[in-house]
Length: 74
Length: 309
Image 1: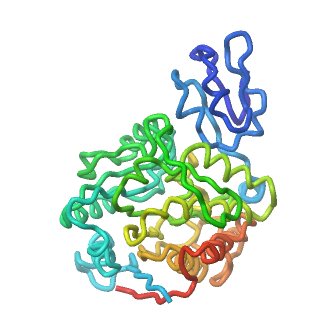
Image 2 (image 1 turned 135 degrees about the vertical axis):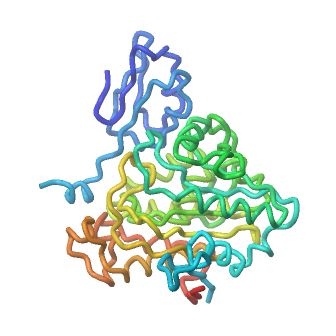
């Protein structure tokens, strides 16, 4: 499972649970030996998961801040 | 009243000594770096080395960092370049032009290969966060050269010298604690006070051993960690240096706000004018909150004398 904000490459994920352990926002959950993104909008982009992941299988996109986004629409 | 030293990027004469990298050395000496670095000191030079996907490009140009490294070495110091996010970010740094070949100094993670090297530091009279995980290599360094890029940030309106320390010289746990403060209001007040808590902790063992630089060039609307770099919102201004981080940030914000909006930028699109609180109008977060909070926390004064070299 992935989302626009946070995604896990399931082919590379070994289900070690490190991302679950280090994430301060509860974004990830291990299900059947793989990490799944269960709360993507809770991500605060601290990048602890990226820093720690032993297979570098996590990608995070920038948060969508509404005030500045308005300047890039229309 | 604190002194803030400014070198403008604009040339007064067509001479090499007028070029900004050369003026940066003069700035640092005027600001007292020779009193801060003793022979044999290990000197951390904290820079934001760009985003992890190597897509953004408006970060501090390595040539400026190289000049600082050479100055530190000439004073007998032992410099290293550092940033947070562990070893993977160092890999990004190499691709972004920050490496031994270009800088004449090692690039090492501020807090270990996976950000687990830190010291717990208590913050007396904290606004929100009473204990900060200070990056181990920053804590252990004898001197901190806080080389920050002045630019916009969606959580605080602006990110410069204070944010470079608060987010860049701490651990992921502390970054999480600060970001979680965003949920408490919509104006970035608590978040910016959290930045000041972290800055206070990092600077606690650096009394008389820290100097702060705001690189007021390529003032892009968003953080250097974003994988894009929009056009700067104001024309290039220059570089400012001070040993007072509050005075420096106030001066940098004033310089940016007093500047005209840059053509082809979102500042122009918004119709901003000289004198406008530009980052507030762009991000709806008042960046002066962190300056006022810094003063209240005892990190410096908002009253400054601007000395142009």
